[in-house]
Length: 311
Ligand code: NAP
Image (cartoon, rainbow, N blue to C red; front, top):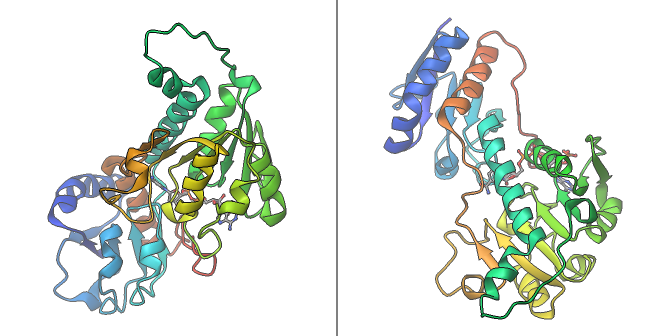
């Protein structure tokens, strides 16, 4: 059986993914016609798409048995009412590597006080004591593909790592908390907090004024998850009071972050433009090809999104 696969993406993305996808399909032994146009949508077996497909009309693809997303976060796709087919999200090993490097780099920046030193290049010799990792507690909210990898890498550097998930998890070297009852303990431990949660109705505005007050005073925050996890006004107030000493923010409620937003000029906020971890075509193509192989052989798909949970 030859699968009809439609790539729903712009010309640049098609140019980046076409050859890696064709190679990965060949290597996986999947017979597929991969196209960036769909003259007969009813003949398409699977749609491959990026986040730009939030507005795409999936309704004509009446026989598609899967929509395979190239992105990890799928909240915008889930809001598309025409997308009724089973949806699989991306868990790309190279994207995970990128996220681990981003998290470790920014945790070390805050842990070592590099920003503090940069702000004090004023000709005054001001020695200060610097903690080592085993004396520093870091909490990772979200223990999925990315959170577990980041928490594991931090534990390997000797940080005392706590993690928090919806359901109970066991991660080597990580003190795991779960559910609403576990959040307060997870936040109370967080000298440095890393948020790697998806945006769902349950996580919307999770870090509000009340929950930010559960952090140890002077905590540092790194958010490469989603902007909507945080009440931005509450974070600005916490930065003003010193409850939060500094923040690295990669994702925002409005992206691009508008010119003139207070985060841009804040002396203790580092803004990165949603670059923490991107999908890499060569490795992601192998994930897509494996799911198409499963589709062809009627095996369960990997990384299916649970619509009721929202991730
Ligand atoms: P994942 O594998 O689906 O893991 C999500 C984790 O969050 C799981 O541990 C889950 O708990 C936990 N969770 C979800 N809802 C929760 C709730 N209400 N309470 C407590 N825990 C909850 O996702 P992932 O691949 O690690 O990716 C996480 C997020 O990172 C993505 O959704 C995306 O928003 C973001 N991301 C950002 C970038 C970037 O460049 N900035 C790149 C990629 C991804 P369970 O373990 O119990 O299910």
